[in-house]
Amino acid sequence: MTPMRAMVIDDSRAMRMILKRIVTKLNFEAVEAGDGKEALDLLADMTEVPELALIDWNMPNMNGLEFVTKVRADPRLREMTLVMVTTESEQSQIVRALAAGAHEYVIKPFTEGAMIEKLALLGLVPTGANS
Amino acid sequence: MSVEVEVNESDLAEMVEQVWESYLDPEGISPLIPTYDENQPSEVHSSVSITGSWSGHVVYACSRAAAQRAAAAFLAMEMDEVSEDDISDTLGELANIVGGNVKAMLPAGAHLSLPQVVLVSESSARYPNAKRISGVYGMWEGEPVSVSMWQSSADNKEEGA
Image (tube, rainbow over all chains, first blue to last red; front, side, top):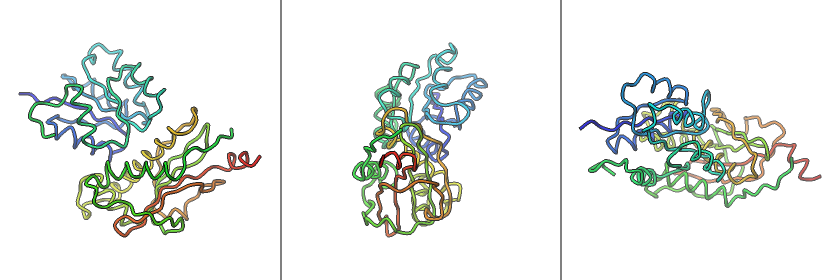
């Protein structure tokens, strides 16, 4: 069975490592990008679109909200599940992200368990994953 | 613009506790022990700036050993595997997380900068025209760690106006 793939988009390498560790534990193959623009460039070169993207909000070059907006405008990327993972915790920001097309919103700091729970709610925790 | 700072030490302590629970001490075996000593030494620090409805900085400062320990915990590495880049990335993200949560408690219209990490002590750092208004100070496995808020002088002046 082909593993699902997750794109981890955050300008913090430390946060990318944490997120990558979690999704790898759930049997995803992880791809990393340091900002929205790099993520879009990587997606343009991929023949198969990842099932999941975990997206920081505040990043240089292209922020997470712009990335979500661009993904939602691209029919090829329509099936991607987009989860914002950010310190932006004001209600207005959450509403903006969800209105732009994000499926879920995780506020930093988060525990590994909380992240896995969110992904499970989205139906993205494969059966038998080490959660 | 003058705003009342609604983030107090208890709020900061709660944010710090969440960071420990999430990343630095998920097993709950080595919490940050409060010292209430704002003059405790530091060797490295990271900060994020907030502008807009409130202007100032959120600073994470600690000893080099505590920074190394934080990076090891954050990145699931052994202490002796931790590089300078790992320390820098981890401290930047810790400041970003606390700063983002502080910003969420401020009036609408506050903006958060990307984090800056400086591997020198907090006291050697320059926060022009800013004064420390709040902080959480403690020892983590015997090493000093603090998270503090510095308010820029424009807001300070208006506070007294």
